[in-house]
Length: 206
Image (cartoon, rainbow, N blue to C red; front, side):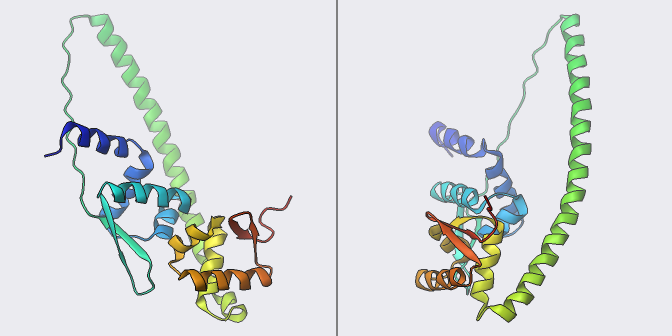
Protein backbone atom coordinates (compact mmCIF):
# COMPACT_ATOMS: atom_id res chain seq x y z
CA UNK A 1 0.00 0.00 0.00
CA UNK A 2 1.43 3.37 -1.00
CA UNK A 3 1.63 6.17 1.54
CA UNK A 4 0.36 9.70 0.83
CA UNK A 5 3.77 10.95 -0.33
CA UNK A 6 4.17 8.06 -2.81
CA UNK A 7 0.61 8.52 -4.09
CA UNK A 8 1.24 12.24 -4.60
CA UNK A 9 4.44 11.47 -6.52
CA UNK A 10 2.66 8.95 -8.77
CA UNK A 11 -0.14 11.47 -9.42
CA UNK A 12 2.47 14.07 -10.40
CA UNK A 13 3.91 11.60 -12.92
CA UNK A 14 0.48 10.77 -14.33
CA UNK A 15 -0.41 14.45 -14.48
CA UNK A 16 1.58 14.64 -17.71
CA UNK A 17 -0.49 13.54 -20.71
CA UNK A 18 2.49 12.25 -22.69
CA UNK A 19 3.65 10.04 -19.81
CA UNK A 20 0.15 8.58 -19.65
CA UNK A 21 0.30 7.94 -23.42
CA UNK A 22 3.66 6.18 -23.04
CA UNK A 23 2.25 3.96 -20.28
CA UNK A 24 -0.79 3.09 -22.42
CA UNK A 25 1.50 2.21 -25.34
CA UNK A 26 3.73 0.00 -23.17
CA UNK A 27 0.65 -1.81 -21.85
CA UNK A 28 0.29 -3.15 -25.41
CA UNK A 29 3.91 -4.28 -25.89
CA UNK A 30 7.52 -3.36 -25.06
CA UNK A 31 8.90 -0.58 -27.29
CA UNK A 32 12.23 1.11 -27.94
CA UNK A 33 12.75 4.88 -27.96
CA UNK A 34 12.28 5.59 -31.67
CA UNK A 35 9.18 3.39 -31.78
CA UNK A 36 7.60 5.38 -28.94
CA UNK A 37 8.71 8.61 -30.60
CA UNK A 38 7.14 7.65 -33.95
CA UNK A 39 3.91 6.24 -32.52
CA UNK A 40 3.24 9.20 -30.22
CA UNK A 41 4.81 11.90 -32.44
CA UNK A 42 7.19 13.07 -29.69
CA UNK A 43 10.85 13.98 -30.03
CA UNK A 44 13.32 11.30 -28.85
CA UNK A 45 14.68 13.87 -26.37
CA UNK A 46 11.24 14.21 -24.73
CA UNK A 47 10.66 10.45 -24.79
CA UNK A 48 14.02 9.77 -23.13
CA UNK A 49 13.28 12.29 -20.36
CA UNK A 50 9.86 10.74 -19.66
CA UNK A 51 11.28 7.20 -19.69
CA UNK A 52 14.13 8.08 -17.33
CA UNK A 53 11.73 9.71 -14.87
CA UNK A 54 9.40 6.70 -14.82
CA UNK A 55 12.36 4.32 -14.66
CA UNK A 56 13.57 6.10 -11.49
CA UNK A 57 10.13 5.57 -9.97
CA UNK A 58 10.30 1.86 -10.91
CA UNK A 59 7.24 2.17 -13.14
CA UNK A 60 9.29 1.12 -16.18
CA UNK A 61 12.27 -1.09 -16.83
CA UNK A 62 14.09 -2.20 -19.98
CA UNK A 63 15.87 -5.11 -21.61
CA UNK A 64 18.51 -5.09 -24.35
CA UNK A 65 17.98 -6.90 -27.64
CA UNK A 66 20.74 -8.44 -29.79
CA UNK A 67 21.46 -4.99 -31.27
CA UNK A 68 21.71 -3.52 -27.74
CA UNK A 69 18.59 -1.44 -28.21
CA UNK A 70 16.67 -0.75 -25.03
CA UNK A 71 13.16 -2.20 -25.08
CA UNK A 72 11.12 -0.50 -22.35
CA UNK A 73 8.25 -2.28 -20.58
CA UNK A 74 6.00 -1.73 -17.58
CA UNK A 75 7.68 -3.03 -14.43
CA UNK A 76 4.69 -2.00 -12.31
CA UNK A 77 1.34 -1.01 -13.76
CA UNK A 78 -0.77 1.70 -12.16
CA UNK A 79 -4.44 1.43 -11.32
CA UNK A 80 -6.18 4.43 -9.79
CA UNK A 81 -9.82 4.44 -8.70
CA UNK A 82 -11.49 7.84 -8.44
CA UNK A 83 -14.95 8.24 -6.94
CA UNK A 84 -17.18 11.27 -7.28
CA UNK A 85 -19.62 12.12 -4.50
CA UNK A 86 -22.59 14.06 -5.84
CA UNK A 87 -23.52 17.17 -3.88
CA UNK A 88 -27.28 17.55 -3.46
CA UNK A 89 -28.83 20.98 -4.05
CA UNK A 90 -32.35 22.27 -4.18
CA UNK A 91 -31.53 25.27 -6.32
CA UNK A 92 -33.31 24.55 -9.63
CA UNK A 93 -31.83 27.51 -11.49
CA UNK A 94 -28.35 26.35 -10.61
CA UNK A 95 -29.19 22.86 -11.90
CA UNK A 96 -30.52 24.33 -15.18
CA UNK A 97 -27.31 26.32 -15.57
CA UNK A 98 -25.27 23.14 -15.09
CA UNK A 99 -27.41 21.34 -17.67
CA UNK A 100 -26.78 24.11 -20.20
CA UNK A 101 -23.05 24.00 -19.52
CA UNK A 102 -23.13 20.23 -19.92
CA UNK A 103 -24.91 20.48 -23.27
CA UNK A 104 -22.38 23.04 -24.54
CA UNK A 105 -19.54 20.87 -23.26
CA UNK A 106 -20.95 17.83 -25.07
CA UNK A 107 -21.24 19.79 -28.31
CA UNK A 108 -17.62 20.92 -27.95
CA UNK A 109 -16.61 17.30 -27.29
CA UNK A 110 -18.39 16.18 -30.45
CA UNK A 111 -16.58 18.83 -32.48
CA UNK A 112 -13.23 17.79 -31.01
CA UNK A 113 -13.88 14.10 -31.70
CA UNK A 114 -14.83 14.89 -35.31
CA UNK A 115 -11.65 16.95 -35.71
CA UNK A 116 -9.61 14.14 -34.12
CA UNK A 117 -11.05 11.59 -36.54
CA UNK A 118 -10.18 13.80 -39.51
CA UNK A 119 -6.65 14.27 -38.19
CA UNK A 120 -6.31 10.51 -37.54
CA UNK A 121 -7.26 9.75 -41.14
CA UNK A 122 -4.67 12.23 -42.41
CA UNK A 123 -2.05 10.80 -40.03
CA UNK A 124 -2.74 7.28 -41.29
CA UNK A 125 -2.01 8.39 -44.85
CA UNK A 126 1.05 10.30 -43.65
CA UNK A 127 2.35 7.21 -41.79
CA UNK A 128 1.99 5.18 -44.96
CA UNK A 129 3.95 7.81 -46.91
CA UNK A 130 6.66 7.83 -44.22
CA UNK A 131 6.94 4.01 -44.30
CA UNK A 132 7.30 4.08 -48.09
CA UNK A 133 9.95 6.82 -47.87
CA UNK A 134 11.92 4.87 -45.24
CA UNK A 135 11.94 1.82 -47.54
CA UNK A 136 13.29 3.99 -50.36
CA UNK A 137 16.01 5.40 -48.06
CA UNK A 138 16.99 1.86 -47.02
CA UNK A 139 17.27 0.75 -50.65
CA UNK A 140 19.31 3.81 -51.65
CA UNK A 141 21.46 3.39 -48.54
CA UNK A 142 22.54 -0.05 -49.73
CA UNK A 143 24.10 1.57 -52.80
CA UNK A 144 25.81 4.41 -50.91
CA UNK A 145 26.70 3.16 -47.42
CA UNK A 146 29.09 0.41 -46.43
CA UNK A 147 26.76 -0.95 -43.76
CA UNK A 148 23.37 -0.72 -42.14
CA UNK A 149 24.56 1.46 -39.24
CA UNK A 150 24.91 4.47 -41.55
CA UNK A 151 21.36 4.02 -42.80
CA UNK A 152 20.06 3.69 -39.25
CA UNK A 153 21.81 6.90 -38.21
CA UNK A 154 20.62 8.81 -41.27
CA UNK A 155 17.02 7.74 -40.67
CA UNK A 156 17.23 8.73 -37.00
CA UNK A 157 18.48 12.20 -37.97
CA UNK A 158 15.77 12.47 -40.61
CA UNK A 159 13.32 12.28 -37.72
CA UNK A 160 14.96 14.76 -35.32
CA UNK A 161 18.18 16.69 -34.68
CA UNK A 162 19.98 14.77 -31.93
CA UNK A 163 23.04 15.03 -29.70
CA UNK A 164 25.65 12.28 -29.46
CA UNK A 165 24.15 11.03 -26.19
CA UNK A 166 20.65 10.98 -27.65
CA UNK A 167 21.90 9.09 -30.71
CA UNK A 168 23.51 6.50 -28.42
CA UNK A 169 20.18 6.08 -26.62
CA UNK A 170 18.10 5.94 -29.80
CA UNK A 171 20.33 3.63 -31.86
CA UNK A 172 22.23 1.71 -29.15
CA UNK A 173 25.31 1.80 -31.43
CA UNK A 174 28.54 1.50 -29.33
CA UNK A 175 30.09 4.98 -28.74
CA UNK A 176 33.30 4.38 -30.72
CA UNK A 177 31.43 2.96 -33.72
CA UNK A 178 28.87 5.77 -33.49
CA UNK A 179 31.53 8.51 -33.63
CA UNK A 180 33.23 6.75 -36.56
CA UNK A 181 29.98 6.48 -38.54
CA UNK A 182 29.05 10.11 -37.79
CA UNK A 183 32.45 11.28 -39.08
CA UNK A 184 31.88 9.26 -42.26
CA UNK A 185 28.42 10.77 -42.80
CA UNK A 186 29.89 14.26 -42.31
CA UNK A 187 32.58 13.55 -44.92
CA UNK A 188 29.84 12.45 -47.33
CA UNK A 189 28.09 15.80 -46.61
CA UNK A 190 24.92 14.01 -45.56
CA UNK A 191 24.94 15.35 -42.01
CA UNK A 192 26.46 18.31 -40.21
CA UNK A 193 27.18 19.22 -36.61
CA UNK A 194 25.88 22.40 -35.00
CA UNK A 195 27.29 22.72 -31.50
CA UNK A 196 26.48 19.46 -29.73
CA UNK A 197 23.69 18.58 -32.18
CA UNK A 198 23.87 16.51 -35.38
CA UNK A 199 21.42 17.17 -38.20
CA UNK A 200 20.84 16.48 -41.90
CA UNK A 201 22.65 18.79 -44.31
CA UNK A 202 20.28 21.23 -45.99
CA UNK A 203 17.47 20.69 -43.48
CA UNK A 204 18.04 24.08 -41.86
CA UNK A 205 18.81 26.39 -44.76
CA UNK A 206 19.10 30.00 -43.64
